[in-house]
Image (cartoon, rainbow, N blue to C red; front, top):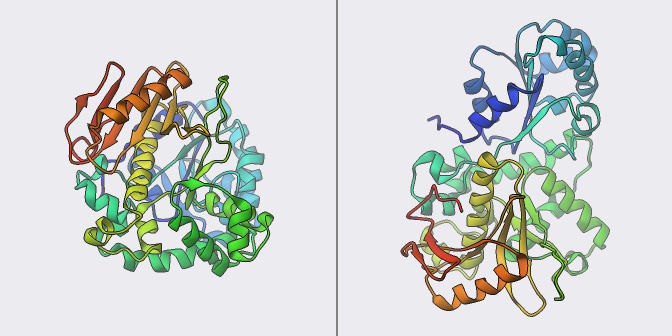
Length: 381
């Protein structure tokens, strides 16, 4: 089953502007399907396959010269020398104002040195996220439990996640030139899952894992580079209040979160202490995924003062700021609206939203509204 991806129009927009586009995202998130759907006339090369990998490794410039039509290069990061060759191939074809290459990779540019160093300014970059309920039309609760990876949604998500973790924590990171300790990364992920959405404390994590904070920092960089975690930074503005300075850390896909915590059913989830933090992470990630397609340059933060005033998500669109507070209940408590009004004053945001589930979408105050995401999966502030 192929779903209509929100990123498709954004990818075509970038292809109309740049001579090459790079699509990054987790392994098996649907990058190949997106590229082949968006560019049906393009030829396709799986750089990870042994024969193609050998040819591109030996002489990437020659292989690129043979490609006269638009070509999709899948898992390009498996041949690091390909990126410098791509720079020359792109520059030599700039005159015809066409997009010649769609490059797919399973790691962030910061982890794939060739993208950040060789192709900066030459390519349009798109990060493809897992599926949202708006894209599948499926029940929000199923997405919350199973996450958004296509294969995880098609069956028992736990059967899918275990071998997937082994692949990305061992083989993929090694292919990018790192020597990962897969057991340590698994333990770090599990500890982060138990603290879903908590403030990052490198020293505390290091003490619990028996390593120094530099090792924890490196592990977090690797996990972020393969899209397992998100470090959400705090929002700062010029007010005379003590603000929290540490980022919050989320397991990005709730299917992975629940697998790490041994949660297999909705009943297990509703009875688990992580329920509230899990729903919060699900909503934050869902809003970020869809916001970036409509407003690609929005920046995302959270807000928290030392006295406890907080908002789970701050969307800074440049022209306006919006704050969002996530509740695992209906989100219609007027007391929560009054607290959010204070955050609006402090941050200079124009609008506040409380996102819950199972309730009504109502106006709670002059500047604060409540919305139920399970009833409105396409809602954006």
